[in-house]
Length: 105
Image (cartoon, rainbow, N blue to C red; front, side, top):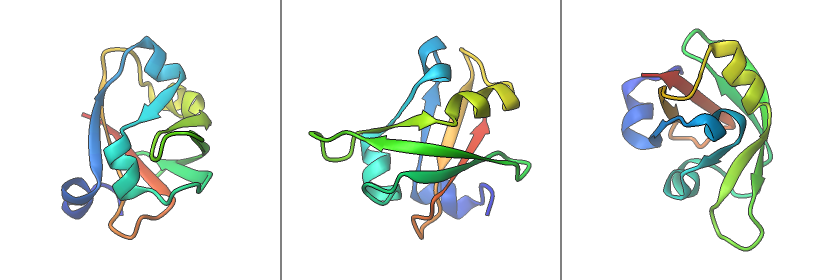
């Protein structure tokens, strides 16, 4: 599924990218708690064309649902032309899969 209405209405969040977000991306804690399986590390970033990139999600040890992309995000941004100033949407299907759909709005 690539950005069907069910994804956007169930588990999604929007982010305005600043320079550091293109290099290092924290995920919204409310989104992470609803959309991702806690402590799952391996995920796939998928663009609107169906292309995918492997990424790793690192979970904070002290905070319940704080996490960030530690590997793969920078390559994904470069390959998809994401840069500071872009508005992007992250979405995960209702099954809380390991696929994180990302689109530039």
